[in-house]
Length: 371
Image 1 (cartoon, one colour):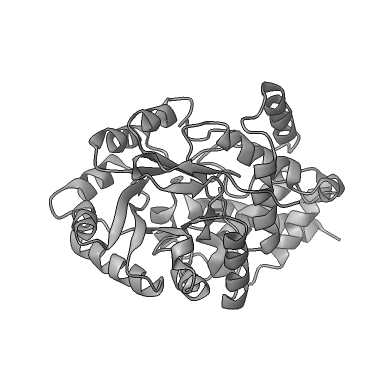
Image 2: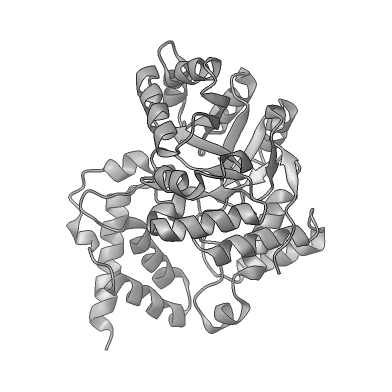
């Protein structure tokens, strides 16, 4: 059953946004025709907040094609990875063209996840200057920032008075400590709209491909994680990455369930997560966000780690699934030339070439032992 969506204020922006937003990071994985279907279904069900980025390959272009006749029905948020004023203005011009719109509701500085980067974008001639200029011209409505991991930078951004929204990773495991260390409460105190990414830990918090997982489906875990995130009233909207109509309908159905969760429901959710039998240590387990892509050598990096994680951390039944995933990869990790372009883009700072080498060694050995 599909629910009737709820809405919350996106901080001091005053925008009333659906509590379930549409994370467009996965749109590059589907065709334009599929994107048209899934995005229109999202709007039909009441989703009115869509988040994308210049670095999400053709995501902006697909949104522009799919929703060009429905622009007044949703808020669009996108991001620039440029750190200087000129680069950010150029990105904005491309975003406007690709999205087929003359304004963007929320424009964000993307992955400002170190003190050095923060100082750069905030300096004279930095990317923030471009966003402020664009806001004065009416090209964007509000200015936001997305940050991974560095809690000090999160505090600086919140307290600076320059940003109206902040995007950060948050899920029941709180891998970055944003609840534990008071970041969510600080954002609420300063009136920032909080946009939550990684509610399923980059796709890790789903039921495994076992018989039990197939019987249960993802509903208990996916719905539980989304409800957990929305139980914190500092959160304005959560943006799970979606590419299928079924995912949209499942996520929207959370609106029919009580929010906030009871303490007993939270305990049951953590029991379910514990039953996965994996280690969730941020920076050591791939979050499968896809920021490392495209690899110049064509290595499907998140899929390599998906196979490796399944092989290492799941029971024997799922180890075989991991080996099948690995065997089917069109390009294997041994194609890596250690250019390290992936490392510079990984928000977790993972040494991807070293981990690829480790994964290839273990999985290749396992394949030779498989009858």
